[in-house]
Length: 266
Image (cartoon, rainbow, N blue to C red):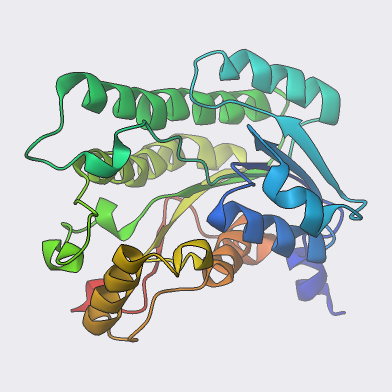
């Protein structure tokens, strides 16, 4: 391996993945593990991963609830237990019970407030704490946040024709906030060796829902509109996320990597 490849390797690095039991988070874990990274899954449950990752030596699970402000103190305990990470990837998105009906026309004040508090306010404070603890200890690190194309462009309501799915105003506000949080944090922390970037995926295929007729219609509508004529596979989002976390992206900070099959190009 030449020197440049050695430099970009994440083998032996310590990575925290917040929300590593979800659709994209699970694939992020897989890529990190296969790259030789010491990986900690910070999530509420580990049920989905026990079967797939039961015999993996360099993966640990630590229960973590990022929907409450107590997660700031919990993060300190996790750092004390495992050490300061080289890589922090936040794939989490805690949903309220009415999340799937939160259209712009009918969302209620309490629901909008709860969604924004959980996924933007608390998550922003958590990522700030991640950066501050690294700064205090003079620890270089890479932070990657998961945003969305709907943080960049408006939602296409035609996707939802013939389905029970609604456009989600809270989701767009949150993901747009993450895009700008990335820029703001990068403008301050990058000079200390702390890089912050985000990935904006387009639609990601979830095979667990493929037999649901409404989901099948959504996938069909999306694929028809997409230049690449399909949704992304979860691993196609995980690989760019891990790229941004590595030293191969050492001169990238404050950036949004759009991985959408050309959705925002048209």
